Image (cartoon, rainbow, N blue to C red; front, side, top):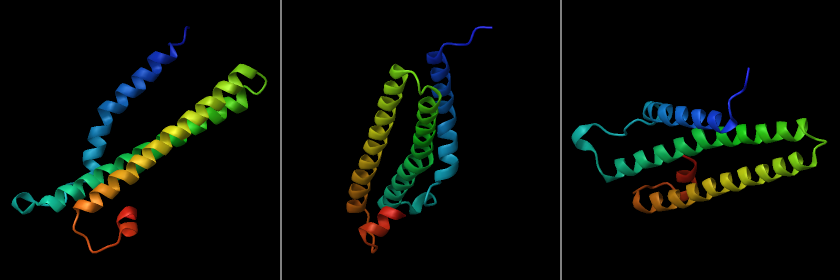
Length: 128
């Protein structure tokens, strides 16, 4: 029996994730207000909840799975020089992508903090 092309498998996983992620996101995030008493602060709080969900609930596990797959590739193909260098390059690309996600998270949190009226300091807002 022939195995499917890896690009097809990655495409199917990506399509499934794209279909399931909004449902899970709406179930996890929640709207911080009811009807007519919604204000600008509630909109900013909703954006904060959405960004935190995407970074910590989606990006961190995906990066961990990526690091795990690359680590397995490093262990399983130790004797092949081309596979070893390709796995190390993949490891660096995953780390760079995750670093970009974290830098964007910090930048967006700074902008949200500027618009949100809060008595808490920036570090407590960053961690909430």
